[in-house]
Image (tube, rainbow, N blue to C red):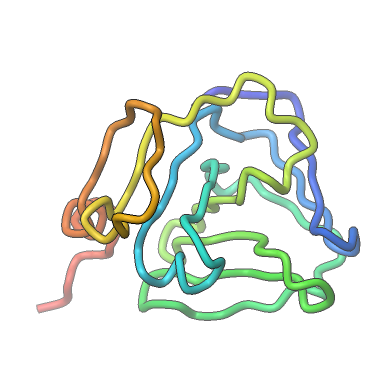
Length: 143
């Protein structure tokens, strides 16, 4: 995780603004069926830990997409704002929201086993299957 002073960005219409001091410089792609259904293609995100603040919160809609995660979007323009792990309050923000992409590196892909054959990224990246992602991020099952 690399610190930047303050990374800022906004949704397409500008009513929701996001800022963080903990933006990773590592861009990841998620190929899971939910992300592709949500945005029409893979979701490209940067991890921002839990240090994320929003203005225009009255325009943020939240969808509980699983037991452990939720997705935020702008109610006015529809821009995707975040994927958040509920247990850790860990935010993954679409990289395209941020004003600057300087110093970012595309270095990992998740749910690679769900990626359709009709597209392919040329970058050499670390790739995780769905089972590997769930094992890493899902909370442990209760007995």
